Length: 230
Image 1 (cartoon, rainbow, N blue to C red):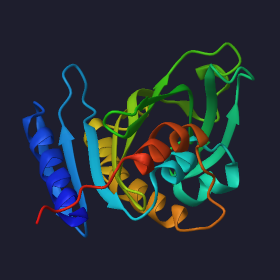
Image 2: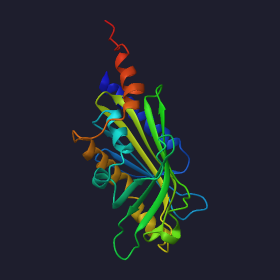
Image 3: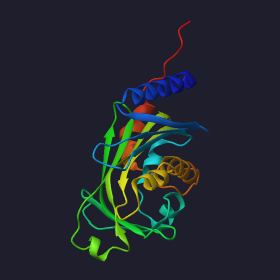
Image 4: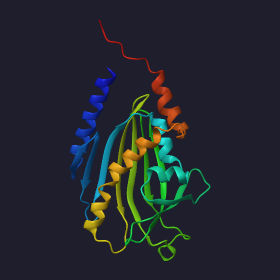
């Protein structure tokens, strides 16, 4: 029954993505599916990836929401710095910088994060988008200040030990790098991100998101299991 549910969920996810206007399949290898979408009024494409990861949903969400810099460096590509700009836990605002390979200038971003929990569908969506900040401006950037049009991580509980993870980003690094080059670089983001998450959640020290535990994991555990009729 569990395997049947997993197959059904994967099929429904693929059907939904296929019906999502404008998305083009790029690859499907080693359990990771990747799509791209050409955005109107932008030379920068959006990218999306999906993978089923053998880890509980609250652990995956805990990793995504965690702000510990050394842990971020193990799964977020090229990150140098990650700091909280607001002490209000209801207003999650961060600054991050990235060490880009020569000759590309380093990049930094200021962004907000919002966590949305859907107990009915047993999923958590973490949304990220750029905002302006008086202290961190293009004038005092580490190199070039980029802009996150949108980014999100969606974690859906499949079982107590498995999660479907979908990631999507539309990020403009700004600067003089041509759009085609940005797209060549960004198309690797879904695979690198999903593999990084998979590696990191395998470690025992990965933090747990308590809200996901309480609102998704625990209610699911209390639901009666479906028994096969005889």
